[in-house]
Amino acid sequence: MSRYDALLDERISHLALFSGTAESFTDGLRREPAVLGLQAELATGAIDAEEAWQFARSLLAGFQPGRRFSGDAVLAALVVSLEGDTSKVAEDLLKAIGNLKLGELPYAPRVARRVILDRAKRVVPVTQKTLSLAPQSSAKFVLLGDDAEDDDSLDVLIFPLAA
Image 1 (tube, rainbow, N blue to C red):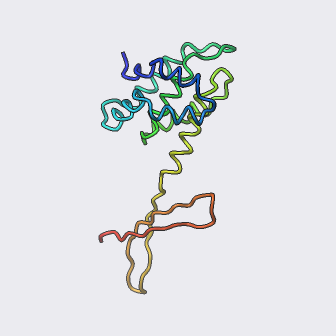
Image 2 (image 1 turned 180 degrees about the horizontal axis):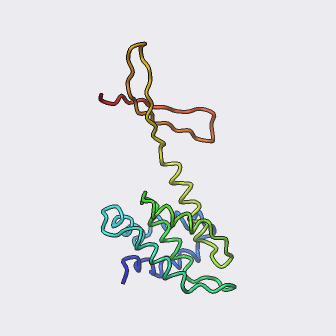
Image 3 (image 1 turned 90 degrees about the horizontal axis):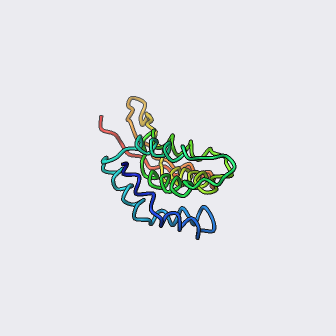
């Protein structure tokens, strides 16, 4: 039995039934005890995203073309539980689910795309540059920048690195 089986809770299926949009469903999932519990276990390393792949594969084994997929809400909850996991495995799973284009899964791919967008807004790119301060010296700095597409500015914080 997987710890991800906690997502099989009826509350998650009911939440899907009463959510009008993928956005409201995502917001509801972010407050679900089963999702919050998995997020905490992922954060402490008690479970890992590789187990999430195995759980997703076991869910998708029941997929039948032309019929609404009964594991859609659970798959969406799995996506939200991985929201804070920055591992490559978690990122790959989010992208794989987000790239699905199946009418039988009305929620999971949309929730995954929203989670990916929300994660991108929270991640700050880090760049290291060598700046010449005087003709004979140079120093290393870490530049933290927010190059948001919604405005024309680049907000930068500069931190000197020890030599």
